[in-house]
Amino acid sequence: MGGWTEGYVGGIDYIRAVYRDWSPAMLCFALTLRGRRPPAALRCGSFTMAEPGCGHGLTSALLAGAHPAARFEAMDFNPSHIAGVRRLAADAGLANAEFLEESFAEYARRDGPMLDAVALHGVWSWVSAGNRAILLEVLRRRLAPGGVVFVSYNALPGTLAHMPLRRLLVERCAEGDGPLPDRIAAAVEFAARMAAQGGGWFANTDGVVERIEQLRHKSPNYIAHEYLNGDWTAFYHADVTRELAAAKLEFAGAAVPMEQLDDLTLSPAQQALAGEAHDAAQAETLRDVMTNRSFRRDLFVKGGERLGRAERRALLGQTRFALLVAADDLPESASTPVGRLSFSRALYQPLGEALAEGPQSLDALLARPALEKQGEEAVLRALILLTSLSLAAPAMPEDGDAERTVSCGRFNAAVLERHRFGDTPGQLASPLLGAGVPVSRIETLFLLAARLGEDPAAFVWRHLSADGIVLGRDGERCEGDEANRAELARRHAAFMQRRLPVLDRLGVA
Image (cartoon, rainbow, N blue to C red):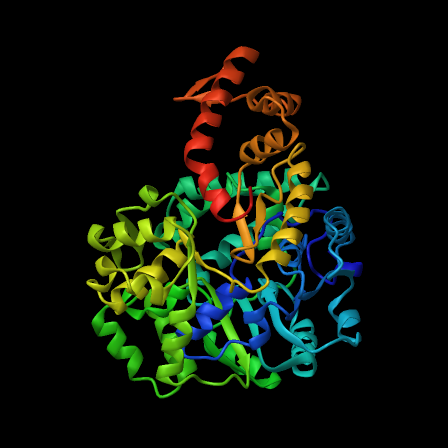
C-alpha cells in the first residue's frame, strides 16, 4: 500500500457505480427544502462541477452526457479508473468532461474556472489529514460564492461497531502473499468463524454478525476500498463542519430529502433534546447519537443565501417531478428509522396517476382536486419520500431539453454497446431528470435488440450464454437454449408492458 497510492489500497479497482445524490436537480431540491438558494447555474444546466476522487468516474460521465451545456472535471490517481472512463467519454462524444489521472496535490496546482458544485463521495473518510487539507485549499480557492459541496463520510457513533471488524480484516489481509481477492475472502471467512464462537465483542455489539454475513456476498473490490485503506477515519458531524469552515463552508442540510424530516428519525422527545443544543453542528451530532448513524451525505455551501418563506414556496412550486416506476408499483409502506411508514392510498394513488402522465410541478399537482384535498404539506411530504426512496425524482426545467435529449442519446448508445459484455455502468442518462435511470443488463440488451431490429430473446440469450450465464424461474434452473430463450421471451413481454413505458417517459428508450 506504499508508493504512489499514499496508503490508499492499490492493485484492485473500486466498484463501478453511478450515484444520484449530486445530480443538479437533486441538489437544487434538497437545498430549496432547507431554505437555501440553489446556484443559478445548477438550475439552468450551465454549471461547472468537479469530482475529486472519482473512482471509475461513471457519475461524472453520465452527468456530462445529461448536461451538454455544463463542464465537468473528475480526477482519480488510479490509472485503470481513468483509462476506462476516458474510453467511455470518447465513445459517447463527451467534449464537456475532463478525466484526470492525478493526485490531490497535482490537482490542487491546476488553474481552472470557478466551480459551482463539488462532489466528495467517501473520500473524506478514506484519505489522510494532509490530503483533506489539500482538498480544503481547492475548495477555498476555486468554489464560487454560493457554490455547493456534497460530502459523504463514515459517521460516528454508528461506525464504532465497524472499527474492530475493519482492524481484523486489515490484519488478516496483511498476512500471506497471495492475490488480494483471495486474502480478502479468507479474512471474511475468518471473521465469520470468530463470530460463530460468540462471546466478547461479537456478543455485545448489535449487527456485527449480520454485517459479516453481508460481506460474504460483497465483491472484494468493495471490501478492499471500504475497509483496507491505510487512512480510514470516521467523523462526528460537528468535527466535519468545523474542518470545512476553513474553506468558508457552512452546513446546508442533508443531501437526501427525507433525512431533513426529523420525525422520520427521532421521537418527539428526542427532537426536543436535539432542540436544546445552542449550536447547529452540535444539534446535528446529537441527532446522529440518538439514531446511531453510521454514514452521512451532507451539503455545504459557500456563502449560500437563505430564501424567504414566499420565495422558497415559489421555487418548490415550480419544481417538476417524474415517476421512476409504474404508478401501481408504488408500495403501501416503507421502512424508516422510527418504524414502518404507511402510504395513504387516498394520497399516493392520485399522486402516482398524475405523475404517470408525465412530469408535473408541485403547483400543477396541487391544482388537481384529489390532491388539493390532501393539502400542500402532505403532497410535498409525499414527494420528499418518493424522491428519497428512488420512486420519483425532481426533473430539470424544460429549457434545454432538446439539447439534453441529443447528448443523452449519444451517451446511451455507448452504454448499450457496453452491456453486450457486462452489466456496468448499469444506468442510462435521462434528459428529463438530468440524471441516471438504473437498468439491468437484460433490459439494456432488450433495448439494443430493438435498435438493431433483432429478435429480443435470441439476441439476449446469445450474449448471456457467451458469458456462461443461465437463467432461472421460480427457483428452478432453465436447462438448455430453448428453455432460456422461452424465459427471455416471457421477460421481454413483461418488459414491454410495464418497464418500457417508464423508460420512454424518462426519455432513455
